[in-house]
Length: 494
Image 1 (cartoon, one colour):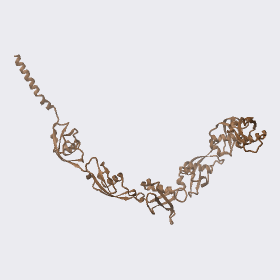
Image 2 (cartoon, one colour):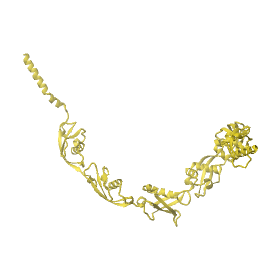
Image 3 (cartoon, one colour):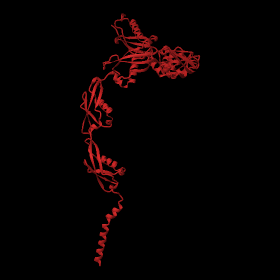
Image 4 (cartoon, helix red, strand yellow):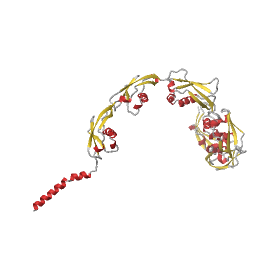
Protein backbone atom coordinates (compact mmCIF):
# COMPACT_ATOMS: atom_id res chain seq x y z
CA UNK A 1 0.00 0.00 0.00
CA UNK A 2 2.77 2.36 0.95
CA UNK A 3 4.59 1.52 -2.29
CA UNK A 4 1.56 2.34 -4.47
CA UNK A 5 1.13 5.66 -2.61
CA UNK A 6 4.71 6.65 -3.41
CA UNK A 7 4.17 5.80 -7.10
CA UNK A 8 1.04 7.96 -7.26
CA UNK A 9 2.88 10.87 -5.57
CA UNK A 10 5.72 10.66 -8.06
CA UNK A 11 3.34 10.60 -11.03
CA UNK A 12 1.59 13.69 -9.63
CA UNK A 13 4.88 15.56 -9.43
CA UNK A 14 5.72 14.71 -13.05
CA UNK A 15 2.33 15.96 -14.23
CA UNK A 16 2.82 19.24 -12.30
CA UNK A 17 6.27 19.86 -13.80
CA UNK A 18 5.06 19.17 -17.33
CA UNK A 19 2.45 21.94 -17.08
CA UNK A 20 4.93 24.75 -16.06
CA UNK A 21 5.90 25.81 -19.67
CA UNK A 22 2.26 25.91 -20.65
CA UNK A 23 1.38 28.11 -17.68
CA UNK A 24 4.39 30.39 -18.37
CA UNK A 25 3.39 30.72 -22.01
CA UNK A 26 -0.11 31.65 -21.00
CA UNK A 27 1.25 34.37 -18.63
CA UNK A 28 3.52 36.04 -21.35
CA UNK A 29 1.21 38.54 -23.06
CA UNK A 30 3.79 39.68 -25.67
CA UNK A 31 2.75 39.40 -29.29
CA UNK A 32 4.87 37.92 -32.00
CA UNK A 33 6.91 40.39 -34.07
CA UNK A 34 5.70 38.70 -37.27
CA UNK A 35 2.14 39.84 -36.57
CA UNK A 36 3.14 43.47 -37.30
CA UNK A 37 5.17 42.95 -40.45
CA UNK A 38 3.90 43.85 -43.91
CA UNK A 39 7.07 42.99 -45.85
CA UNK A 40 10.53 41.58 -45.22
CA UNK A 41 11.89 42.90 -48.50
CA UNK A 42 13.52 46.28 -47.79
CA UNK A 43 14.87 46.73 -51.32
CA UNK A 44 17.72 49.33 -51.47
CA UNK A 45 19.55 50.66 -48.41
CA UNK A 46 22.03 53.47 -49.06
CA UNK A 47 25.20 54.07 -47.02
CA UNK A 48 27.94 56.65 -47.31
CA UNK A 49 30.86 55.33 -49.31
CA UNK A 50 32.97 52.93 -47.28
CA UNK A 51 30.93 53.16 -44.10
CA UNK A 52 29.58 49.91 -42.64
CA UNK A 53 25.85 49.29 -42.61
CA UNK A 54 24.64 49.64 -39.01
CA UNK A 55 21.57 48.58 -37.04
CA UNK A 56 20.13 52.11 -36.87
CA UNK A 57 20.03 52.47 -40.66
CA UNK A 58 18.39 49.05 -41.16
CA UNK A 59 15.76 49.74 -38.47
CA UNK A 60 15.01 53.13 -40.05
CA UNK A 61 14.26 51.50 -43.44
CA UNK A 62 12.44 48.58 -41.76
CA UNK A 63 10.04 50.95 -39.96
CA UNK A 64 9.36 52.90 -43.16
CA UNK A 65 8.40 49.68 -44.92
CA UNK A 66 6.38 48.36 -41.95
CA UNK A 67 4.33 51.24 -40.58
CA UNK A 68 2.87 49.20 -37.70
CA UNK A 69 6.36 49.06 -36.15
CA UNK A 70 7.14 52.79 -36.41
CA UNK A 71 6.52 53.39 -32.68
CA UNK A 72 8.50 50.33 -31.50
CA UNK A 73 11.42 51.47 -29.37
CA UNK A 74 13.34 48.23 -28.77
CA UNK A 75 14.02 47.01 -32.29
CA UNK A 76 17.57 45.91 -33.12
CA UNK A 77 19.32 44.38 -36.11
CA UNK A 78 22.06 41.73 -35.75
CA UNK A 79 23.99 39.35 -38.01
CA UNK A 80 24.21 42.15 -40.59
CA UNK A 81 25.55 41.32 -44.07
CA UNK A 82 25.38 43.21 -47.37
CA UNK A 83 22.15 41.30 -48.22
CA UNK A 84 20.22 40.55 -45.03
CA UNK A 85 19.97 40.93 -41.25
CA UNK A 86 18.04 39.49 -38.32
CA UNK A 87 15.64 41.83 -36.51
CA UNK A 88 14.29 41.22 -33.04
CA UNK A 89 12.35 43.27 -30.51
CA UNK A 90 12.71 43.57 -26.75
CA UNK A 91 8.95 44.11 -26.60
CA UNK A 92 7.83 41.19 -28.79
CA UNK A 93 8.36 37.50 -29.32
CA UNK A 94 10.33 35.97 -32.15
CA UNK A 95 12.60 37.47 -34.80
CA UNK A 96 12.60 37.91 -38.57
CA UNK A 97 15.12 37.91 -41.40
CA UNK A 98 14.93 40.94 -43.69
CA UNK A 99 16.46 41.14 -47.15
CA UNK A 100 17.85 44.18 -48.94
CA UNK A 101 20.27 45.34 -51.56
CA UNK A 102 23.12 47.49 -50.18
CA UNK A 103 23.89 50.54 -52.31
CA UNK A 104 26.96 52.55 -51.37
CA UNK A 105 26.58 56.30 -52.08
CA UNK A 106 29.39 57.98 -53.95
CA UNK A 107 30.90 61.37 -53.13
CA UNK A 108 30.32 62.39 -56.74
CA UNK A 109 26.53 62.27 -56.20
CA UNK A 110 26.75 65.49 -54.15
CA UNK A 111 28.67 67.48 -56.77
CA UNK A 112 26.61 67.99 -59.91
CA UNK A 113 28.52 71.07 -61.01
CA UNK A 114 32.25 70.44 -61.17
CA UNK A 115 33.27 73.20 -63.52
CA UNK A 116 33.14 76.10 -61.08
CA UNK A 117 33.92 78.90 -63.52
CA UNK A 118 35.98 81.92 -62.43
CA UNK A 119 37.54 82.35 -59.00
CA UNK A 120 39.06 85.74 -58.18
CA UNK A 121 42.32 85.74 -56.20
CA UNK A 122 44.78 88.46 -55.25
CA UNK A 123 47.48 88.72 -57.91
CA UNK A 124 46.08 85.65 -59.70
CA UNK A 125 47.58 83.36 -57.07
CA UNK A 126 46.47 79.76 -56.49
CA UNK A 127 43.19 79.87 -54.54
CA UNK A 128 43.13 78.83 -50.91
CA UNK A 129 41.20 75.82 -49.64
CA UNK A 130 38.73 78.18 -47.91
CA UNK A 131 38.08 80.10 -51.15
CA UNK A 132 37.43 76.87 -53.05
CA UNK A 133 35.11 75.39 -50.39
CA UNK A 134 33.04 78.58 -50.52
CA UNK A 135 32.82 78.38 -54.33
CA UNK A 136 32.06 74.62 -54.29
CA UNK A 137 29.16 75.08 -51.84
CA UNK A 138 27.81 77.97 -53.88
CA UNK A 139 27.65 75.79 -57.00
CA UNK A 140 26.60 72.56 -55.25
CA UNK A 141 23.88 73.16 -52.62
CA UNK A 142 23.67 69.41 -51.81
CA UNK A 143 27.25 69.51 -50.50
CA UNK A 144 26.65 72.21 -47.86
CA UNK A 145 25.94 69.70 -45.07
CA UNK A 146 28.74 67.38 -46.16
CA UNK A 147 32.11 67.21 -44.43
CA UNK A 148 34.72 67.25 -47.18
CA UNK A 149 38.25 68.39 -47.86
CA UNK A 150 39.99 69.89 -50.90
CA UNK A 151 43.39 68.54 -51.93
CA UNK A 152 45.95 68.82 -54.75
CA UNK A 153 45.03 72.45 -55.48
CA UNK A 154 46.57 73.96 -58.63
CA UNK A 155 45.78 77.06 -60.68
CA UNK A 156 42.92 75.33 -62.53
CA UNK A 157 41.86 72.17 -60.69
CA UNK A 158 41.64 70.37 -57.35
CA UNK A 159 40.27 67.16 -55.80
CA UNK A 160 37.42 66.84 -53.32
CA UNK A 161 37.81 64.05 -50.75
CA UNK A 162 35.90 62.84 -47.70
CA UNK A 163 36.64 60.33 -44.94
CA UNK A 164 33.11 58.97 -45.36
CA UNK A 165 33.50 58.08 -49.06
CA UNK A 166 35.93 56.03 -51.10
CA UNK A 167 35.83 58.04 -54.32
CA UNK A 168 37.26 61.47 -55.14
CA UNK A 169 35.79 64.27 -57.25
CA UNK A 170 37.87 66.46 -59.54
CA UNK A 171 36.79 70.08 -59.97
CA UNK A 172 37.92 72.68 -62.49
CA UNK A 173 38.05 76.47 -62.28
CA UNK A 174 39.63 79.48 -63.90
CA UNK A 175 41.77 81.78 -61.71
CA UNK A 176 41.23 85.49 -62.40
CA UNK A 177 43.47 88.22 -61.01
CA UNK A 178 41.59 90.25 -58.40
CA UNK A 179 40.93 93.90 -59.22
CA UNK A 180 40.36 96.73 -56.80
CA UNK A 181 36.87 97.00 -58.28
CA UNK A 182 36.19 93.44 -57.05
CA UNK A 183 36.61 94.72 -53.49
CA UNK A 184 35.37 98.29 -53.79
CA UNK A 185 32.18 97.65 -55.70
CA UNK A 186 30.29 100.63 -54.33
CA UNK A 187 31.96 103.78 -55.65
CA UNK A 188 29.01 106.11 -55.14
CA UNK A 189 29.43 106.79 -51.44
CA UNK A 190 26.23 108.81 -51.15
CA UNK A 191 26.64 111.54 -48.50
CA UNK A 192 29.62 112.40 -46.30
CA UNK A 193 29.08 115.04 -43.62
CA UNK A 194 32.13 116.99 -42.46
CA UNK A 195 32.95 119.22 -39.51
CA UNK A 196 35.60 121.71 -40.50
CA UNK A 197 36.90 123.38 -43.64
CA UNK A 198 35.08 123.24 -46.99
CA UNK A 199 35.18 119.49 -47.70
CA UNK A 200 35.55 116.12 -45.95
CA UNK A 201 38.97 114.89 -44.86
CA UNK A 202 40.73 111.96 -46.56
CA UNK A 203 40.22 109.97 -43.38
CA UNK A 204 36.46 110.52 -43.59
CA UNK A 205 36.42 109.39 -47.23
CA UNK A 206 38.36 106.22 -46.34
CA UNK A 207 35.99 105.46 -43.46
CA UNK A 208 33.01 105.88 -45.80
CA UNK A 209 34.57 103.59 -48.43
CA UNK A 210 34.97 100.84 -45.80
CA UNK A 211 31.46 101.39 -44.47
CA UNK A 212 29.96 100.96 -47.95
CA UNK A 213 32.40 98.13 -48.84
CA UNK A 214 33.08 96.03 -45.70
CA UNK A 215 35.50 93.75 -47.62
CA UNK A 216 37.78 96.75 -48.10
CA UNK A 217 38.60 96.90 -44.39
CA UNK A 218 41.63 94.66 -44.98
CA UNK A 219 42.98 97.32 -47.37
CA UNK A 220 42.62 100.24 -44.96
CA UNK A 221 46.39 100.65 -44.58
CA UNK A 222 47.05 100.16 -48.29
CA UNK A 223 44.57 102.56 -49.86
CA UNK A 224 45.69 106.09 -50.63
CA UNK A 225 43.07 108.78 -51.06
CA UNK A 226 44.03 111.40 -53.61
CA UNK A 227 42.99 115.03 -53.79
CA UNK A 228 39.35 115.60 -52.92
CA UNK A 229 37.93 117.69 -55.75
CA UNK A 230 34.76 119.73 -55.97
CA UNK A 231 32.52 119.37 -58.98
CA UNK A 232 32.80 122.38 -61.29
CA UNK A 233 29.03 122.78 -61.52
CA UNK A 234 27.77 121.55 -58.14
CA UNK A 235 29.57 122.64 -54.95
CA UNK A 236 28.01 119.76 -53.02
CA UNK A 237 29.48 117.08 -55.31
CA UNK A 238 32.98 115.73 -54.76
CA UNK A 239 35.25 113.01 -56.10
CA UNK A 240 38.58 111.48 -55.11
CA UNK A 241 40.97 109.13 -56.88
CA UNK A 242 42.00 105.94 -55.09
CA UNK A 243 45.52 104.53 -55.33
CA UNK A 244 46.83 101.22 -54.03
CA UNK A 245 50.27 99.64 -53.67
CA UNK A 246 48.80 96.17 -54.18
CA UNK A 247 46.71 96.77 -57.28
CA UNK A 248 47.60 98.19 -60.67
CA UNK A 249 44.81 100.69 -61.21
CA UNK A 250 44.19 103.78 -63.26
CA UNK A 251 41.47 106.36 -62.86
CA UNK A 252 39.71 104.49 -60.06
CA UNK A 253 37.69 107.02 -58.15
CA UNK A 254 34.82 107.40 -55.73
CA UNK A 255 32.11 110.04 -55.81
CA UNK A 256 29.91 111.51 -53.12
CA UNK A 257 27.87 114.50 -52.15
CA UNK A 258 28.93 116.37 -49.06
CA UNK A 259 27.65 119.02 -46.74
CA UNK A 260 28.95 120.62 -43.60
CA UNK A 261 27.44 119.90 -40.23
CA UNK A 262 25.23 122.66 -38.91
CA UNK A 263 25.65 123.86 -35.33
CA UNK A 264 22.38 122.21 -34.29
CA UNK A 265 23.75 118.82 -35.51
CA UNK A 266 26.87 118.91 -33.35
CA UNK A 267 25.11 120.69 -30.48
CA UNK A 268 21.65 119.06 -30.45
CA UNK A 269 21.15 119.65 -26.71
CA UNK A 270 20.02 123.26 -26.37
CA UNK A 271 18.28 123.06 -22.99
CA UNK A 272 21.32 123.77 -20.81
CA UNK A 273 19.59 123.46 -17.45
CA UNK A 274 21.02 125.47 -14.56
CA UNK A 275 23.94 127.82 -15.20
CA UNK A 276 25.79 129.18 -12.20
CA UNK A 277 26.83 132.74 -12.90
CA UNK A 278 29.18 135.06 -11.04
CA UNK A 279 27.89 138.13 -12.88
CA UNK A 280 26.36 140.85 -10.69
CA UNK A 281 23.51 141.24 -13.18
CA UNK A 282 22.44 137.65 -12.58
CA UNK A 283 22.66 136.96 -16.32
CA UNK A 284 25.15 134.29 -17.42
CA UNK A 285 28.24 135.54 -19.22
CA UNK A 286 29.24 134.59 -22.77
CA UNK A 287 31.85 132.11 -21.46
CA UNK A 288 29.49 130.58 -18.91
CA UNK A 289 26.96 129.84 -21.68
CA UNK A 290 29.63 128.43 -24.02
CA UNK A 291 31.12 126.22 -21.29
CA UNK A 292 27.68 124.83 -20.42
CA UNK A 293 26.89 124.21 -24.10
CA UNK A 294 30.16 122.27 -24.47
CA UNK A 295 29.45 120.28 -21.30
CA UNK A 296 26.05 119.18 -22.64
CA UNK A 297 27.23 118.26 -26.17
CA UNK A 298 29.99 115.61 -26.56
CA UNK A 299 30.87 116.54 -30.16
CA UNK A 300 31.57 120.15 -29.15
CA UNK A 301 33.54 118.87 -26.17
CA UNK A 302 35.66 116.73 -28.48
CA UNK A 303 36.35 119.72 -30.74
CA UNK A 304 37.49 121.74 -27.74
CA UNK A 305 39.63 119.01 -26.17
CA UNK A 306 41.40 118.17 -29.45
CA UNK A 307 41.83 121.89 -30.17
CA UNK A 308 40.43 121.34 -33.67
CA UNK A 309 38.41 124.50 -33.21
CA UNK A 310 38.84 127.51 -30.94
CA UNK A 311 35.26 127.62 -29.68
CA UNK A 312 35.74 130.84 -27.73
CA UNK A 313 36.85 132.56 -30.93
CA UNK A 314 34.31 130.91 -33.25
CA UNK A 315 31.14 131.00 -31.19
CA UNK A 316 29.35 134.27 -30.55
CA UNK A 317 26.56 134.69 -27.99
CA UNK A 318 23.93 137.36 -28.51
CA UNK A 319 20.63 138.50 -27.01
CA UNK A 320 21.35 137.10 -23.53
CA UNK A 321 18.28 137.17 -21.27
CA UNK A 322 17.39 135.42 -18.02
CA UNK A 323 15.99 132.45 -19.94
CA UNK A 324 17.63 132.21 -23.35
CA UNK A 325 20.35 133.37 -25.73
CA UNK A 326 21.38 132.99 -29.38
CA UNK A 327 24.63 131.16 -30.18
CA UNK A 328 26.12 131.90 -33.61
CA UNK A 329 28.93 129.97 -35.33
CA UNK A 330 30.90 131.40 -38.23
CA UNK A 331 32.59 128.03 -38.87
CA UNK A 332 29.29 126.15 -39.18
CA UNK A 333 27.47 129.11 -40.71
CA UNK A 334 24.44 128.61 -38.49
CA UNK A 335 22.86 129.59 -35.19
CA UNK A 336 20.92 127.94 -32.37
CA UNK A 337 18.69 129.17 -29.59
CA UNK A 338 19.66 127.92 -26.11
CA UNK A 339 17.59 128.00 -22.93
CA UNK A 340 18.75 127.87 -19.30
CA UNK A 341 17.99 128.80 -15.71
CA UNK A 342 20.66 131.15 -14.28
CA UNK A 343 21.61 130.75 -10.61
CA UNK A 344 23.80 133.27 -8.83
CA UNK A 345 27.06 131.54 -8.07
CA UNK A 346 28.30 131.61 -4.50
CA UNK A 347 31.94 131.94 -3.59
CA UNK A 348 31.51 128.69 -1.69
CA UNK A 349 30.76 127.03 -5.06
CA UNK A 350 34.23 128.11 -6.16
CA UNK A 351 36.05 127.45 -2.88
CA UNK A 352 34.76 124.00 -1.96
CA UNK A 353 37.90 122.98 -0.04
CA UNK A 354 38.32 125.38 2.89
CA UNK A 355 41.05 123.48 4.77
CA UNK A 356 44.21 124.44 2.86
CA UNK A 357 46.59 122.31 4.91
CA UNK A 358 50.08 123.71 5.57
CA UNK A 359 51.18 127.09 4.19
CA UNK A 360 54.86 128.02 4.32
CA UNK A 361 55.57 131.76 4.50
CA UNK A 362 58.79 133.73 4.15
CA UNK A 363 58.64 136.56 6.68
CA UNK A 364 56.48 138.06 9.40
CA UNK A 365 54.04 136.35 11.74
CA UNK A 366 51.62 134.86 9.20
CA UNK A 367 51.32 134.19 5.46
CA UNK A 368 50.74 137.02 3.00
CA UNK A 369 47.67 137.32 0.74
CA UNK A 370 49.75 136.09 -2.18
CA UNK A 371 51.01 133.02 -0.30
CA UNK A 372 47.49 132.15 0.84
CA UNK A 373 46.10 132.59 -2.70
CA UNK A 374 48.68 130.14 -4.09
CA UNK A 375 47.57 127.54 -1.51
CA UNK A 376 43.90 128.36 -2.20
CA UNK A 377 44.25 127.72 -5.95
CA UNK A 378 46.20 124.51 -5.30
CA UNK A 379 43.15 123.12 -3.48
CA UNK A 380 40.51 124.94 -5.60
CA UNK A 381 41.70 125.40 -9.23
CA UNK A 382 38.44 127.16 -10.17
CA UNK A 383 39.48 130.10 -7.94
CA UNK A 384 42.24 131.00 -10.42
CA UNK A 385 39.57 132.43 -12.76
CA UNK A 386 38.71 135.03 -10.11
CA UNK A 387 42.26 136.12 -9.25
CA UNK A 388 41.48 139.78 -9.96
CA UNK A 389 38.21 139.73 -8.01
CA UNK A 390 39.27 137.78 -4.90
CA UNK A 391 40.38 139.56 -1.74
CA UNK A 392 41.86 137.92 1.35
CA UNK A 393 41.62 139.69 4.71
CA UNK A 394 41.54 139.18 8.49
CA UNK A 395 44.62 137.00 8.15
CA UNK A 396 45.95 135.17 11.21
CA UNK A 397 48.45 132.34 11.46
CA UNK A 398 45.61 129.80 11.08
CA UNK A 399 42.62 131.49 9.38
CA UNK A 400 41.58 134.11 6.83
CA UNK A 401 38.40 135.44 5.20
CA UNK A 402 38.07 135.25 1.39
CA UNK A 403 35.66 137.55 -0.47
CA UNK A 404 35.07 138.39 -4.13
CA UNK A 405 33.72 141.40 -5.97
CA UNK A 406 31.69 139.00 -8.14
CA UNK A 407 30.11 137.05 -5.30
CA UNK A 408 27.81 138.08 -2.46
CA UNK A 409 29.12 135.67 0.17
CA UNK A 410 32.51 135.25 1.84
CA UNK A 411 34.33 132.10 2.92
CA UNK A 412 36.46 131.42 5.98
CA UNK A 413 39.50 129.28 5.24
CA UNK A 414 41.82 127.58 7.68
CA UNK A 415 45.40 126.38 7.49
CA UNK A 416 48.52 125.58 9.46
CA UNK A 417 51.33 128.07 8.83
CA UNK A 418 55.04 127.88 9.48
CA UNK A 419 58.08 129.88 8.47
CA UNK A 420 60.00 128.60 5.47
CA UNK A 421 63.61 127.73 6.36
CA UNK A 422 66.69 128.51 4.28
CA UNK A 423 67.12 124.76 3.77
CA UNK A 424 63.69 124.64 2.12
CA UNK A 425 64.42 127.66 -0.09
CA UNK A 426 67.99 126.89 -1.20
CA UNK A 427 67.82 123.30 -2.37
CA UNK A 428 71.39 123.21 -3.82
CA UNK A 429 73.76 124.72 -1.21
CA UNK A 430 76.65 125.39 -3.59
CA UNK A 431 78.17 128.52 -5.19
CA UNK A 432 80.73 128.47 -8.02
CA UNK A 433 82.73 131.70 -8.14
CA UNK A 434 85.53 130.48 -10.39
CA UNK A 435 86.31 132.88 -13.20
CA UNK A 436 84.72 135.86 -11.47
CA UNK A 437 86.70 139.12 -11.27
CA UNK A 438 86.23 139.83 -7.57
CA UNK A 439 88.99 140.20 -5.03
CA UNK A 440 88.65 136.83 -3.32
CA UNK A 441 90.98 137.83 -0.52
CA UNK A 442 88.56 140.54 0.58
CA UNK A 443 86.05 138.95 2.97
CA UNK A 444 83.33 141.55 2.44
CA UNK A 445 83.52 141.31 -1.33
CA UNK A 446 83.47 137.50 -1.16
CA UNK A 447 80.44 137.54 1.15
CA UNK A 448 78.63 139.88 -1.23
CA UNK A 449 79.47 137.69 -4.24
CA UNK A 450 78.13 134.58 -2.45
CA UNK A 451 74.88 136.33 -1.48
CA UNK A 452 74.43 137.82 -4.97
CA UNK A 453 74.79 134.36 -6.51
CA UNK A 454 72.21 132.90 -4.09
CA UNK A 455 69.76 135.76 -4.76
CA UNK A 456 70.20 135.28 -8.50
CA UNK A 457 69.28 131.60 -8.27
CA UNK A 458 66.54 131.87 -5.63
CA UNK A 459 64.24 134.89 -5.92
CA UNK A 460 62.67 134.29 -2.49
CA UNK A 461 65.95 135.07 -0.69
CA UNK A 462 65.92 138.64 -2.07
CA UNK A 463 63.19 139.55 0.43
CA UNK A 464 65.02 138.05 3.41
CA UNK A 465 67.49 139.59 5.79
CA UNK A 466 70.53 137.30 5.33
CA UNK A 467 74.06 137.68 6.62
CA UNK A 468 77.06 135.59 5.51
CA UNK A 469 79.73 134.10 7.78
CA UNK A 470 82.85 132.77 6.00
CA UNK A 471 84.66 129.54 6.94
CA UNK A 472 87.62 129.87 4.58
CA UNK A 473 89.54 126.78 5.71
CA UNK A 474 86.56 124.64 4.57
CA UNK A 475 85.74 126.72 1.48
CA UNK A 476 82.29 127.13 2.97
CA UNK A 477 80.04 129.83 4.34
CA UNK A 478 77.08 130.00 6.68
CA UNK A 479 73.94 131.87 5.60
CA UNK A 480 72.13 133.29 8.62
CA UNK A 481 68.57 134.65 8.71
CA UNK A 482 66.94 135.78 11.97
CA UNK A 483 63.60 134.20 10.94
CA UNK A 484 64.55 131.51 8.46
CA UNK A 485 67.42 129.82 10.24
CA UNK A 486 70.92 128.94 9.07
CA UNK A 487 72.33 127.08 6.08
CA UNK A 488 75.87 125.96 5.38
CA UNK A 489 76.93 126.20 1.75
CA UNK A 490 80.09 125.30 -0.17
CA UNK A 491 81.81 127.63 -2.63
CA UNK A 492 84.57 127.31 -5.21
CA UNK A 493 87.06 130.07 -6.01
CA UNK A 494 90.21 130.26 -8.14
